[in-house]
Every structure is written in structure tokens, then in C-alpha cells.
Image 1 (cartoon, one colour):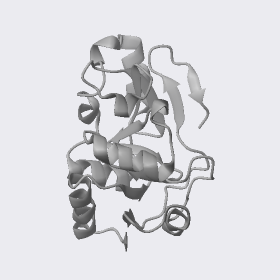
Image 2: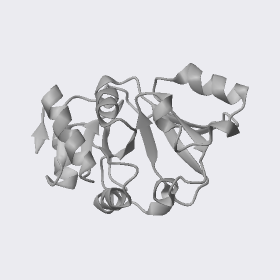
Image 3: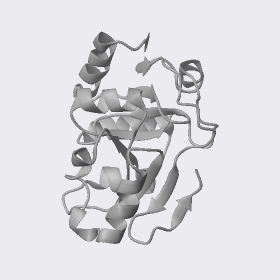
Image 4: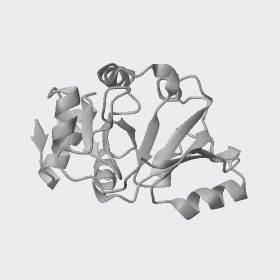
Length: 190
């Protein structure tokens, strides 16, 4: 089911998230698949839909930094790391940050860190604010296939068994840049 953006439609997406369902939504460059990061069953459903191995780990996208603090080890960040991160947020830069001991492996995969982003893109921010926490965010495509850039492309690759927020992506050509928070090292060019 595709829904257009309105407060009622965002409410439908939030209900789906609270019911441990996978949703699709536009991000800065491509459509993302998302779910409740605290639900192992929702994350497993997302990974199965995408055919993505759990070992790779996932990204969390948030409306503000406070939404991420229960998942990351904020104390691991020195002043230089914080400066780098906050200079780029909100915005299209994803940072890999060490995690708290309680962060589940279904999010981190085989890593001791988690990729996180505070988005400036309004549809993502609306969803995260309405949901009250970050969303899992991974490109809406089958592993190895090109990422979907429209709601129709999402349906073409992944079917119609979940809600899709039918809005345009922000228009960036490439997915977000990914950097290591501790070193500043570029992991993926944006």
C-alpha cells in the first residue's frame, strides 16, 4: 500500500512500526527500508526482505542526536570527534560510532560499532519524531540490485507487503557519505 504524506499517513506508518512491520520511505538519495530498531523480529523481516546478511550491520537514522544515545557509546567520542559529527548534522553524513554494551547484534552485525545519521531531510525527520526514536535505514532494494529511487521502484523490486511513504527522495545522486567517528576516515564516498 502506498500512502501520500500527511499527518494521518505518517500516523499509519508509525502504527506499522509499532506493530513490528517494515516500511519504506524516501531518504536523501534513495528509498530506505525501515523498522523499529528495538524489535529483533522486525529487523529479521527487513533483512529477509532485502536478502541482506545480518553480519553487515545496519544504519540508524534519527531526527536528533538524543534519539541515538541509547545505542551508541557517547563517552567514546572525544571533543574532536564530537566536533566532526555535529558540524555535519543534521545532514547527509553517516558516522560509525562505538556502541553501548546493550546495543543488540541484530543492529551491529559483526561489528562493535553502529552507523548512525541525524537527517535534515524532512520526511525522515517527521517519521522519527512521530515514532519517537530512530529508524533502521537501509536502501530499499534486493542485495546486489540498484537502490530504488521512487515508490514504484520499491514495489517493483520488493513487492507490496508493506507501507511505502510515496514522496520524492531529496535528490542527492549518491547515498550518504559514511565516516568513522573516531578517526574521521572516509568509509564510503557520498
